[in-house]
Length: 311
Image (tube, rainbow, N blue to C red; front, side, top):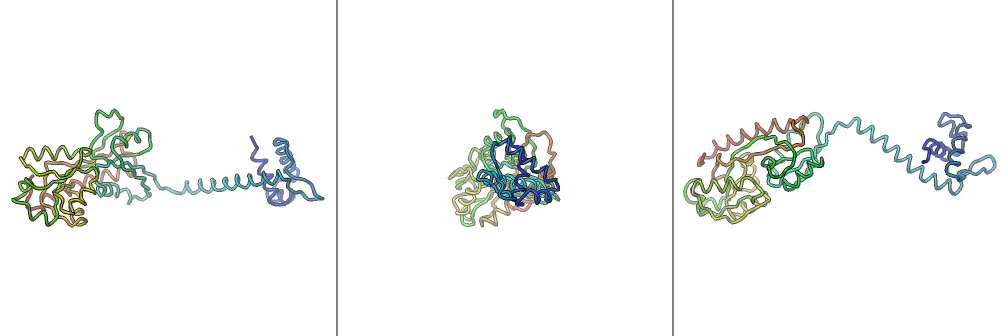
């Protein structure tokens, strides 16, 4: 392997135009530099310089070696600068997996407290099925997963569930559709078009059980993996749909729909799943602490605010 100290002496000599100037730049005797370059030439079995009078000129091979040396020491300078920058940059990288059943606005609200920490956090977010994300967590490609439920027992994946909060659900409809609904909530759902989350969401089972328990018989007109897409259909009047009460006001404003009722029997739960037993990261601690207050208080306020409700 090439001795990079010898290569560096050669590089400085070539750049400075001679051994004397190189010795002044490096604060090393000319004899030392000359000896080191000779060792490099012996190791490579080539001549790097040729004497022209009192001057040294690069041989053709020397010019080729110089081009490589330029690149090598340029990268070395970049490396040194990167290390210095990294030592002063306190930005924490948090690789987050977001289960596709979790509404995007919920994901943002859960992560937002970590953005206010004194030491900055940079998120690398990836959305996918919970099964796929758990595989990446096991391979340490993710630091944390935000999900609408704990790790299913049959998955056989090691991880730790941290429930960060839960809330009830609010049923939404476009103003035009809401006018056609007969009776008070929840009876008005019978015969109404209903949009529901697909079976990737744990809330689908709760919703269907709740409908059966209250003998409500809506017409299911669509199932959706993507909650945002379901909200767009709801905005167009394709059916009544439900969202976590924590984001009901936000959805109402964004999609110009209205809340027709609230249920506290159907519970949307949110979990942080990690490979570690305890939430030691300041970012995860901030997320956990803020989420519990936000989800519980928003659900209570929403229940009190809606006139026609079923608790």
